[in-house]
Image 1: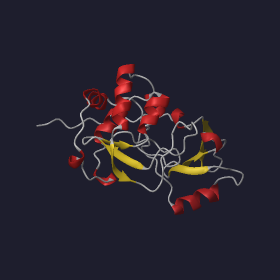
Image 2: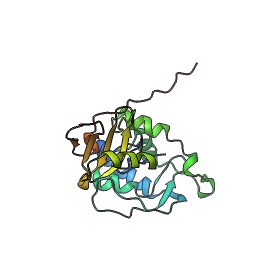
Image 3: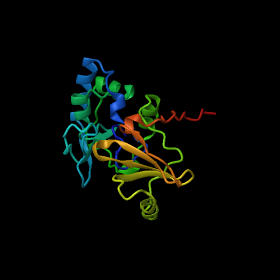
Image 4: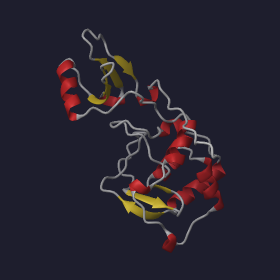
Length: 211
C-alpha cells in the first residue's frame, strides 16, 4: 500500500504529506505521474478522498488502483503533481521501469489485505509520522467525562486524550490545536498551530533480522 495519509480529525499512524514535500527530480516525477494515472481500479469506497493540504480539493476519487504490485488511492497523483510530494524510492523505481501487469493478473484486494508495513516504515524513516504513544481516541463515555470538566466556553473537537495525565487534545477552527489539562486548576491550554507542530515523531520500526 502506498499513499494513505494522516486524518486530522481522527489522528492515526499514517504520515503527513506536508513532511514529504520535495525530493523528486523532474524525470522521476513525470514517470511517477504516468504510473499513478495508469493504475487499474481494484476497490471502490463510499466516501471520496480529500486533499490533506486543505487546498480546496474535496473530491479526489473514491477508488484504490493498482499496477499489480502496489495499491494506491486514485487521487495520489494530485499530491505529486500539485504539492510535489515524494514517494518511496522502491515505488519510483517501479515507475521508471514502467512495470505493469496484464488486466487478467490484477489481484482482487480489500483494505484488510493490503501490506502497509513498507509504506509506514519508509514514512517513519522520513520523520513524517507522529508519535501518539500514551494517547488514545476518546470513546463516547470519555467524551462525556471530558465535557463535564472542560470550561463551557471551550469550543473544539476532542480527538485525543490520555487518562493517565488527564490531558485532552482539541482541534479548533482553522486546524490549530489546544492541549487542555483536566486536572483541577489546569490553567491555560497549550496551543499548537496544527498537527505539523506536534512534538513527537514516530521512530522507524526496524524489521527483525533473519536468523
